[in-house]
Length: 230
Length: 205
Image: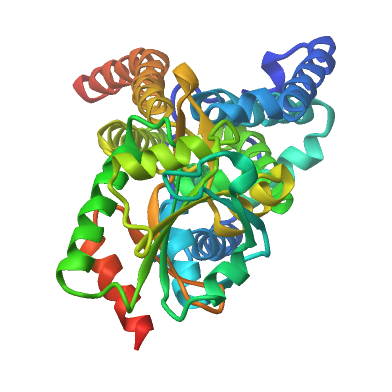
């Protein structure tokens, strides 16, 4: 097999061995295929978020015990009246699976979309009489959110406390641990905003994260939580 | 590309520059990898170019190594195939993001791209123009398509990078693919035209 060397390339005195080259090519292709298999979880995902959702769907994740601060009712919003509970205890206190979302109260972008979705979801739950079978829990990842902010947000969303609860994680280390475990990456953006991966997290009363549903698919999130409620 | 083109004194400097580029890419990982655009359009090429400079120096100092490489890389097929494989891999968003959080992925990134740069000068020098055209054409097309996808995606591909950053990266990839294609044409086309003219003269005779 004679090939013309490209004009700008000086001819090499050493002849390449085609058999060796094919062997090396096969090795390279095998290495690349194995790496790609790993990175795409068996050619099933491309983005990190898809990977996170698939990994959780395949192996439900135990959530770490973190201390939560819950805003009281609208009448008692001061911090000292706040209830303190750990996440597993709060989940276990109730037989209902929870649809957990992460947000920050000052958000103008994706969380307000998610907030509206949740508001509609609450309406749907009440309309279909599902409030005894599942519930909503929204956790703030922004240390600037005071309990008063959460209570104010809840009031703005007309959250029914029996269906939809809000919580903050006062301890920074625990907050970090929970976000890391769940795979929420919060990027500081301009004007004190954040960019973060928003989704509905379906959590069992045993404190296991069973499934992650895209925030544009509230119906699917409801269905997934109802399935767990059986 | 060949040993004859570089004076022996210059090779030491080449190797040093190559090593410095790779060292910079490693030391400045924090700031470079904080932005998707800097990560993909600056750090990844830095590692590969570091590898290429090292290869040019090695071609002079260690001719036996270059000979070994030549024997395993007929017509530059292996080196150019690695160009497609390695570049395709690091354009997968999840692969890129793994290098942020997993040390072995980061090590693999440096190793695979340094190897790419190290193989490429020899591979190109052994490859006929048509082979170069095939592989570089594929590489540029792949990069341009990825760049356009990055710009069109309504959602983020990497959780660690913002949507704006993703769009800038997409523009960077498209510009780079056009730049590389244009550079190849400027480098190769006049000589090819000359070759064609000579061939015509031969057949006319």
